[in-house]
Length: 335
Ligand code: KG4
Ligand code: ZN
Image (cartoon, rainbow, N blue to C red; front, side):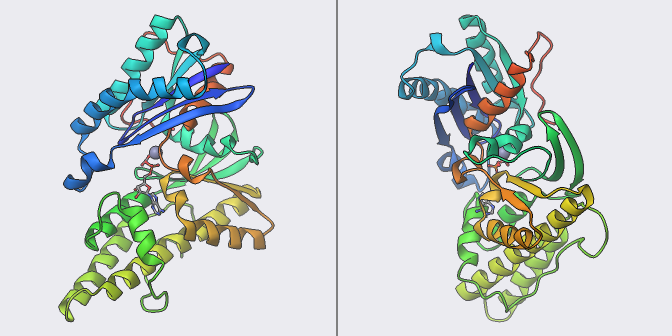
């Protein structure tokens, strides 16, 4: 079965073609960063309009680069939520219109299920069951995964998502949106010994996260530096490093705890923040000591993309799922 995947939940138009026998055939992505950068964050209406402009040309491009035509597509999967309502509606309307015109099924997919299953696009794939750490701009969750659609939430952020915290700290340091990669880059040259930021909620049992206290701590440190003669480039790098180390340290503790609690030895990381190199390295180091394995998607499939939606959709379509007339986009949608 060849499944065309459409991702339009936020600020990337991602299109891909996945073949259940042969794997990923082709994919294309248009990132709207340049559209939103001057506003310091995603402007929902501009996001919707840009998806309208980019989706069809990208579909054409993906089919051409796979050497296929519309007649070769067997089903369409699109992101039905969670995300920005207008952006989701663009993808859903296009997917369902094309599916109706071509006489094939359409299926709305959960964006976080897409992220969760993205490591399955790699040659070395994890076996079920595993624990997944989902860390994106909107979510920070630990999930037990026993199979496709068999998910149990083990813990989540009680306030900001990890990516959101990265983006807000980037703003405090005067870095552009989306801030995560900029903070990570700056942290590379920071001194890890200068500041020691708190690792929130690691002293008590449980698998929930909280990043708002860490964010405030970071802001207070910025203000202290400012009042002591100005925030220098050195200060910024050291703060970025301390913040990143605190997030990474917290995640390592929680992931280890989740694996122990569930009696599992496979961890899967996904979502935009899983592109963070420090996080990958520290998790791999900590878990290898315990004899556990970490799997993550290729960097281009950590952040939003069409391939993960095509893959997740293909699994559910193979199981017989289809949209019906009552299917709606769901801006808020617990997994
Ligand atoms: O999964 P994603 O592309 O979109 C959502 O579904 O939210 O994740 C985007 C988030 C942003 O907050 C971005 O700053 C963060 O992932 N991010 C990173 C890195 N790359 C992207 N955060 C930390 N380090 C990175 N290298
Ligand atoms: Zn995402």
